Image (cartoon, rainbow, N blue to C red; front, side, top):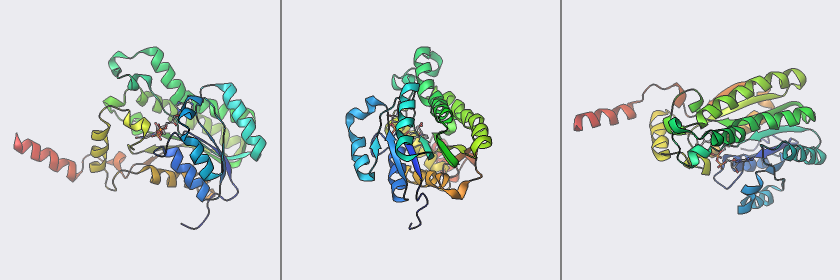
Length: 274
Ligand SMILES: NC(=O)c1ccc[n+]([C@@H]2O[C@H](COP(=O)([O-])OP(=O)(O)OC[C@H]3O[C@@H](n4cnc5c(N)ncnc54)[C@H](O)[C@@H]3O)[C@@H](O)[C@H]2O)c1
């Protein structure tokens, strides 16, 4: 792909933990498409030091910020706008459920953990946008994207309280998307991505099964992290200026399927074997 879709654009990318991360792939592709950006992650995630490799590769600065802490976000936005002026894009690629991590069932939630997970996975999106809003940090026709999963609409039992967090996250995109649109034509969308083998993804119980089921159900197959990054670049580009307040499925068709021949064949075989 030769056209540079993000030439001259500046932004912030949250959530690159390691080379499997969706945000990592977005950073590489944004760099390829001519964007400049700041990389950020929670201070605790910096310990592995992998993000420094990405920073070097993409010529970016790393500014740590816990996305649940308003003072961290203010510092991040001040530094990023001090460096670039107003921003053209922000990627929120953040998710974590303590209940999922610790194997607590949805019917036996620890509510302190639920609140923590909600703060990190959902409310942080509002915090990022409110901080940028108050600082008037976005350029006209800017683009803000967060990543989500279809468990916000349909039930996947082992996705646990993350399903509720994603529903809340998607609602924030619509609610804040209205205000951004009216004030300075900034668009806000969520991308609902296929199951993807990353640190966050593989923390979900039975994730392998999840992935192969989705693969068999989707006429185009599962979307990879790389493909998700390509889609994100289009949403940051000027080619999608009138797309806002949407939850956009990037899942090879999975979300509109009832059943596929491949899944049906497996089911039928099993029934015959019994
Ligand atoms: N992997 C999947 O199957 C899948 C599917 C659909 C959507 N998503 C979503 O994609 C996004 C990115 O996840 P990923 O799959 O690349 O996994 P990942 O584990 O690489 O990324 C999650 C990131 O969230 C960051 N994070 C956690 N707490 C934070 C905090 N307090 N402040 C700032 N950052 C914090 C982590 O450090 C990490 O970089 C998440 O929103 C996830 O829910 C993932």
